[in-house]
Length: 464
Image (cartoon, rainbow, N blue to C red; front, side, top):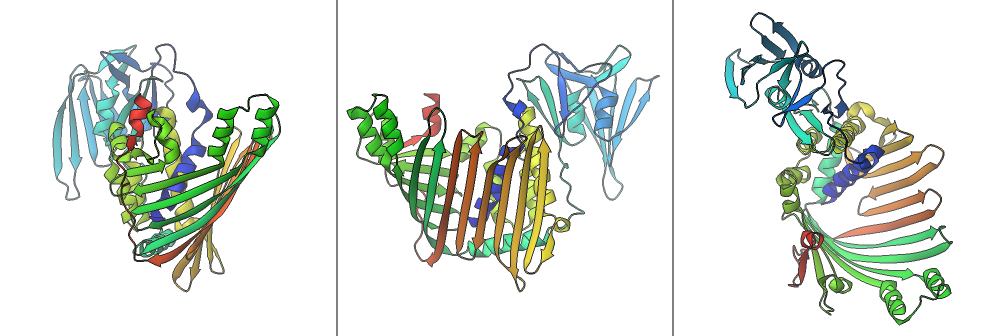
């Protein structure tokens, strides 16, 4: 579980940072069709891609060249041939058949004939081919972003790490795997200080006390959060909105108990609290649990949850990258681009060539800048003898003219870990969180599901 948290925290943070601001743009207007390959938008200088009978057609030369294939066109027979590595793709203009020949390591050629429902054709002296079929023939995953009218192509071997070594981070993964073989009792505390400057200056603070159990693939956390909402109450009183209902609400918010169960193997994430009974529409003293079924969520988005589990079971970072590459979304061009950039960052950050050693510490840093924003991540792995004993992750996000708007530091040292996060939201809100978690070995086993029958699937709530 410790390793899983480490990897998913890195991934979530990097994907959040790399998601460009244009990802929030409205749907594309007009009928122009675009093509994206490996996260990059492709420029077509003469003939543009078109949609014919619900299929996207593109100029063959541009698409094959962007996929680094060697191209040959026989005008007499109207035959297009593209060769990439050990694969040869052949098609005839006007024919719905595509021939794919692959040569194995022994020199044996295997030929497959693909019957399609879309024949290539000539327009303005340019040959247009069905992008999905030809890209798949060259070992690519192809998707369609309907909102932005974009055909998305991702090469399945995009992240080739054959010539990259990850011995240092693999040591860390082995350390985390060894750590996870035992069960641990957890104790911890997280402190919160926040200040909102708009429309008025309001401060509030709080403390969350944490106890729980964790094993390799299961975690239970019981939390009690105490909040000081004095300024908010004063504001409500000044505005004349502090009635009995509001006082009751402040009383309930001043101390919140919440329980968490995370079953990685089953793909179930539960959050329980008596305060959540209002979500059912009925007041109840029984604890209400909200369920996020990750297996179901992955299935609905066309992804395989079992692939995610592999992240927790391997000590080979190259294998982790190969597994994550299978999860690249191909239905939104912005998410595709940001996910690819995130994975590239992880490769650059964790390659042995990126680390420098000083004393007993290995340090690697990565900086990415785009559209006025800058993201920096630094990874420090601490070694004693030939054994990893801890790590530190520092992340920061900055904006031109605003400086750093978010910094975060996570430190692991044996059976203790600390976190510190600062957020400065355009000068209107400042938030600081810091805390510490301590682990001690135990024979107790965490549970995988709540005993209560009062469980609500969050997807049912959202659909309602």
